[in-house]
Length: 203
Image (cartoon, rainbow, N blue to C red; front, side, top):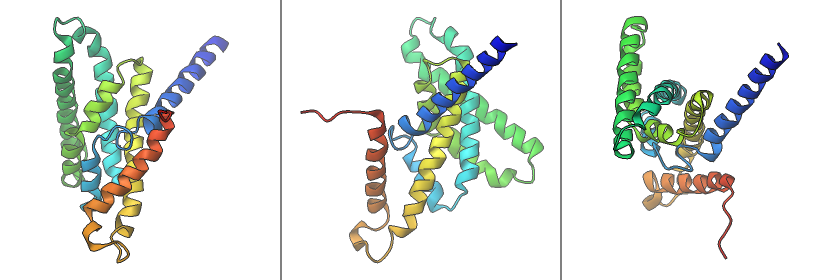
């Protein structure tokens, strides 16, 4: 019994550690520059960051689980290096269709509201990037990295949304208002997050 509890504790600690890595060190927007356009889109369209983030997290996590079980078979292929992204996209497509069918069957009341978010969540660089980055982990690691990627996206989008309205004030020169100043803001935040990786300045 003690060994079982210790195993559960170790697994939980490992999953928490990998999730934190995905949220901060491997942040899909700030340190990998993936899915920035989707984040800016949902902010401009006033979509709910939290709803979008939950959908993205669900798609990423389910796709990561599929990838874990399929990866051992994919790597046996002769041209696995070139075929891996294609198979990953196919698995994301399978999860995408499954979620659409689930929502149309069990969430009819909210289906029209969340359907555009499902489209945008599945077909972007964040999901594929998370799958490619999680290849070295175990099943629990894949799950944790999928969850962490979604949480990292929510955090990044929230930080961008905080500054989005304020960056369009009269204090900003007209030439920089809107998209240009937002990119500068994202760049500054990216430098801060990238520093978490621990790179040293070259001399």
